[in-house]
Image (cartoon, rainbow, N blue to C red):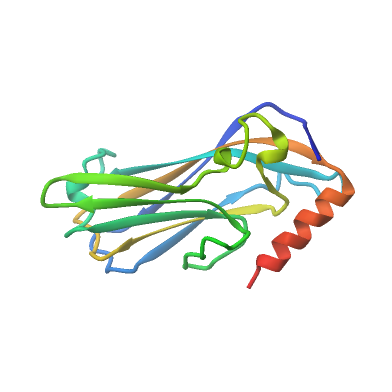
Length: 184
């Protein structure tokens, strides 16, 4: 299916949820893949791991007590099609990874749930099991639910481990069709 053209490297993007953002706020950022994806040569990106990092305030701390004004959650999704400022359902083919950070502000406790990680789809290091991206942009969306954000900025960073791969024309076309079919 795919042959690696590079070793693993990291892509990162950080988005900011402003202080006192009302319940249901969504913010989206983009990661440009134009330098890596090339239709003419069948070049794509293979993603094998995504980590989400949550930080708050100017010191970029990890204390959850200031992230939300009351108990609630911070949810995050990484997709290869533009969802606007919305989340997609888990069966959407463009969903690469998602997570939820559930926060108990009264006790300063958080529990993190990683819903989907590409490296859980198959054996580590196997290109055929990685999430292949043929689009030239990734979209990182995050938002708060059940409560407004606290009195400081919330920073949500996606760290994506990827590599450039070369796809055969049939595989490229199959991925492009799958990606287009998800765009609704």
